[in-house]
Image (spheres, each protein chain N blue to C red):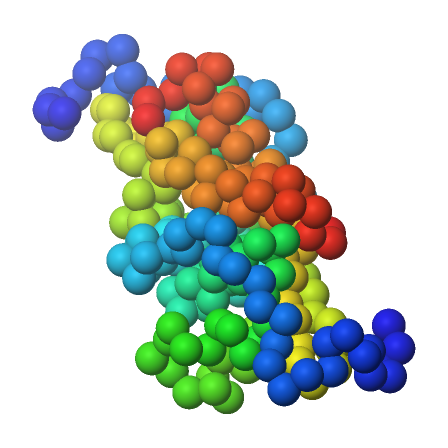
Length: 127
Length: 127
């Protein structure tokens, strides 16, 4: 876009666009940001995706360690972070620990993002 | 759940669950993780949500600075991080800069998360 001044908008006050829905509250933003942060590490996101890609959205820890170029303690740390953030749950059965995706948390995150996208599509914001 | 051993699963090998779809590739995970990281700061997420809550998914920078207990340079930094991650676009009109949500990026993120959630719901994983 040209940097020349546009007469219609070249005012001391901005062209005000009203707020048409409630933005995230401070508390909600803190909660959602913490969950997104847990998914914002590339190895952790791949681990999470791998668990989710197993039948039933559940994987044995013995079955998700071979695909990553990191140590087992690092994988355990990443799984703990995902669990602490409410993205995975774990259950011990016999000798092994099984990790499952918490669908509810995923749907909440997806919903927050898709609401924003849907609102923009409806109101004609540029993509 | 009781920690007592369950006979059916108390074996040296785990109860194998097959991978039923392709997990995120290393490249895709790096790209998505970077976008999630940009949204994983609470103030940045609130800023993003506030822009998205304006009519047309667009807000003047002059109109989004008053609601945060941080300095204007900090807000500018956060907006730049969101822009660099492909979550916002900016456009100067006259004296002011306007920020818009990149709907395409949001829909991609939402889709990644909802696919996981939908697969789990279908296959009956615990929520």
